[in-house]
Image 1: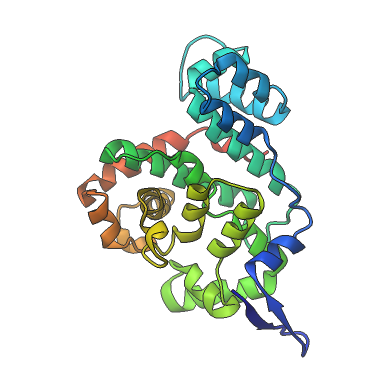
Image 2 (image 1 turned 180 degrees about the vertical axis):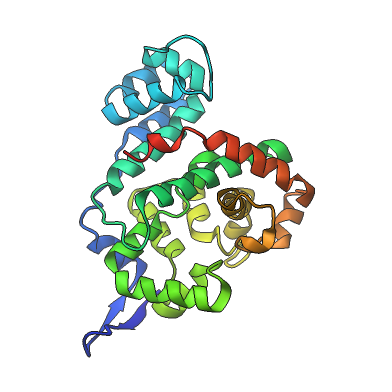
Length: 298
């Protein structure tokens, strides 16, 4: 998808695509492979905690985050966790994979200037979405084979790329969104200004980093499920779509769905998820995120 964008300060135009924005962001070289190595071990029936621990210990940032998480109030063990193997046992191997993806993403994004949004606000919303996705699955008793924490955590990775590479046009899109619809659907305004949105940029980045296809789908379609064939209608995409809105409610300390990005009612129907469960999901989301933000913002 291409967009012909006019530079407001000049008379020339330029051809822009999600892929060209990703390629021009020189700070984004490659995604650290520790998360993929952990993912591979989780699918290997012959691997165990010590194998995963050896991989974790190759990444100092992940090692530190895992120890801090296992000693946090979330687990409230009453005794100090001092070894990686013990930390993995406490947190759980699948959660370690999610943490690895998150820490790897924050490490990769450290050199990117976050124009228009703060690093803290970006990761705060991402964490709320991750927690809301997990809570939606648990409380709604939804079956999915995907790691919903990871999908929720990384759903907006296109934003810092778009905002850092095109701050003036991104600001124009944000202002247009605020003027037209209270800022609840910025992706719509981005499409008007750029011809594509941060979801498309995030998907291009995820493909560059060789993310699993299911994760790419969540990034690409979470704002507009049902928009592009069967992939956008998959359960994991619908879960992140709902979680994105519930994350905003949690941030606002509100249960008024009118204050959050609209949830497509088909998503609730297809997941057999009752709207009556939303207060419980929001409540669990708020409790889950306490103390986690420090792991992603230094």
